[in-house]
Image 1 (cartoon, one colour):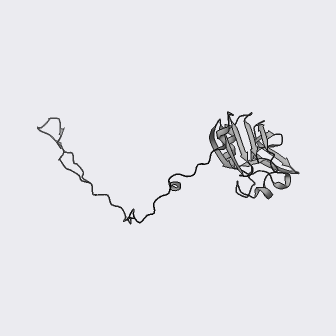
Image 2: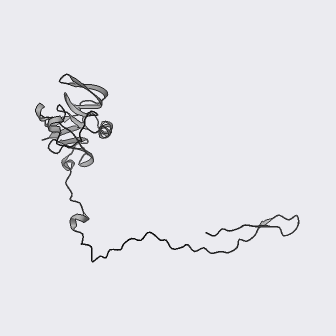
Image 3: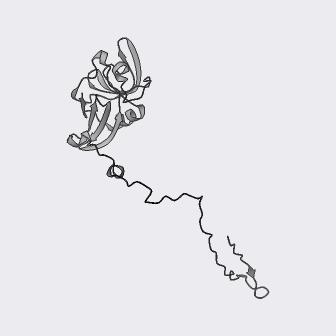
Length: 189
């Protein structure tokens, strides 16, 4: 790298100094080099298929929604989609009700309330939740910090909820803030 030097030159005693002209230098950057990368001939690579160019698109369940806010839950897929009209805003894996308690009721309701930091009780056992949004009396959306298995997995059949829909804590916090009382909830088999 070239460094220019600035010199102050006085032309006569007592005169104000002025900057001398900087020497003219040119700098040529060295060519950029990188570690050797083996070159693969186009002839040796298999051509990309259409599926590799574009992932298969699965239509969102939100496409048929006309509600301003709607949460669609699929028990079979253990998944939920959050809709603003026909547009999907977010989706998440969920955990629904255990088979032994009859699972999670299916149907369409509205969010009835929103509460934070409360205890929920079922079968004599109490569970602390940070976010609670009931939509069908004792059934609602909430976090489940005690859940030991991944959301969306088949374990819901034996270790799932008592009928509520569990969301991961970060998704539930977002859903709690986004959703208004009166938003539509649809639970599908």
